[in-house]
Length: 240
Ligand code: SAH
Image (cartoon, rainbow, N blue to C red; front, side):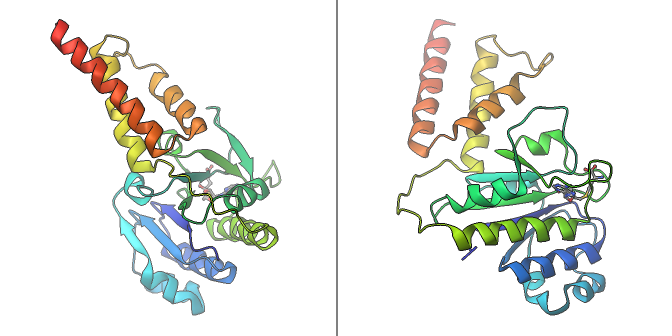
């Protein structure tokens, strides 16, 4: 049922927490765990804390970067204990579950969780369509990562249980990988035409990413944008 949702843990330092996450996932029917550069994995503490959910650990995939973890995802949520200074579209845990339940089954979604000590960086949040916050006690809002996965997993499960059958529309949304290639191309062209100066980037790249994440282009729309960029480049190169 929650087949199209993956849990991504970024740079987890305590292997016991990875086990606690696996257990929380299995109780909620989530199966796909991706670990970005864990400090220790596999590790006996992870297996011990996973209890009967060690099958989730065995199937976990380790990757070197968040980009790689969400490359084939078209909807990415970054879970954050803090409300950020950077403004980014934000949902609470319940809205996050409902949002995923509305997606066509072919869309892969990722819930991304940060480091125990410092959470997710702002650069990592730029890969996310939404920031998700569990509205806990504002004076003590930082849950253990296993508990955070439990709460979000529960909301995803509840939303799926009460969702009406999703219409079989299958919009071919651009994935993280498509978007990364598009941003590279866009910034390259903006630099060529003199609009973007990497020595003085200000907030341009972040603002553009926020805008395109909000738009959520599909693959065909992204191809049009890439085509526009290429024709600007051609024109610019011949006039130079
Ligand atoms: N001190 C860190 C908290 C890390 S807790 C910080 O200030 O960000 C580890 C991870 O659990 C966080 O990165 C986040 O992904 C998740 N988490 C903890 N509390 C949360 C909350 N209230 N809402 C959403 N995610 C939370």
